[in-house]
Image 1 (cartoon, rainbow, N blue to C red):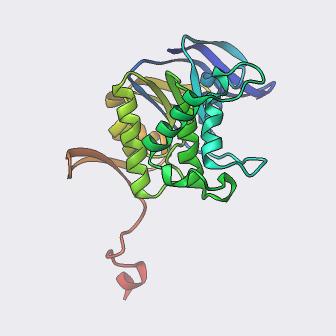
Image 2: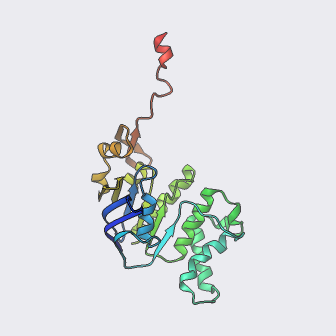
Image 3: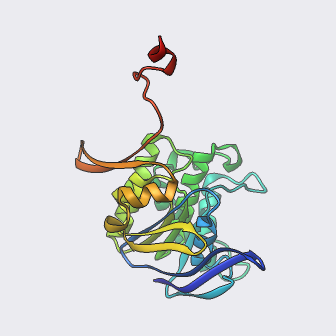
Length: 259
């Protein structure tokens, strides 16, 4: 549904963000892009969405694509319902007014994301996490076949993270393609079919998520020791990623050890 070949992007003549990337977002599959801050994950995602022209290579899309940014500010005090209704704009002719079907699909998108109760609130007055939910609903209202999301749960609390991740699973089960960036390897392991690891301009790795997202690769990606383990959750076993964050609370402090 989105196919990138020999993709590269640079901001200056000699400073490449990434080069020679081959990646495909497929129908009914989730593609997760992971990497440290500043390595070009968002740039890669914007190239895939068609919002940014690559410096080299090609991006081919065969179906409508919707982009959900990590953050967004509105210039005017639009209501949540109006923000979601804007997702219908590509279906309207110039100067046309949204019709009954557009409003029906807007209501359905609000309901599916679980934010119908916010429909009359001002978008500008929402928290960052609430705004992110609205932008996902707007993408749904557009009736896209591929949704490209930049850190879709970064500003969400635990409950809404679960809601969005479950929604993305449901969308892929219905045939939609999903491409997203995330700083949560756990989410990628839980959700993704395919993965991209952005280690550096000349080191971008792609492949099946189950094979690519192991402890060794994630440790190299983030520059610290990482362990993966299986835990039993409410819905069965899950693989989680445990980074080395230093001593635990109950570990003896250096001063205590000296004493």
